[in-house]
Length: 196
Image (cartoon, rainbow, N blue to C red; front, side, top):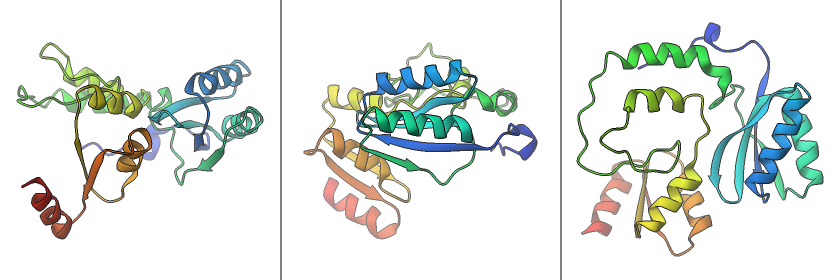
């Protein structure tokens, strides 16, 4: 386990905001324009085709909110977080994580695993350590992971852990998807019954 300490985080004040109802390309162009004005804001999570989360300084996020609202964003929701997650601002933490990953030996998997960085299935020749360290500073592409699963005709999705955010993203893209959640023993037993 790697714990990110305060001295590994940049000193500015950061925010994250979810942008709903705008094309990701338009959001990217808006962020690029704001960055050209020396304010930091970038897409950090592409959750599904209708939602992109931005990460940036407080000033950068406020500028992005104003511009994206004018461009027709249906909804903007500030997240309860203050770190610049999945951005280059975590490069120091990435370097520490890379050192820890050198101590880990990965075995070859037997089932396909989709990377959150690009929505592609891990291949035998992929450098898993490099992918994992880069994931810390790269946007999450869950939108592409959903697309990959749809192309593979996955018919049942199981979300493990508290909350149902990922299930919700899948349902936004495919209302017919069979989505279940496991967050405790009762829900585990329910899912086992469903899968029989």
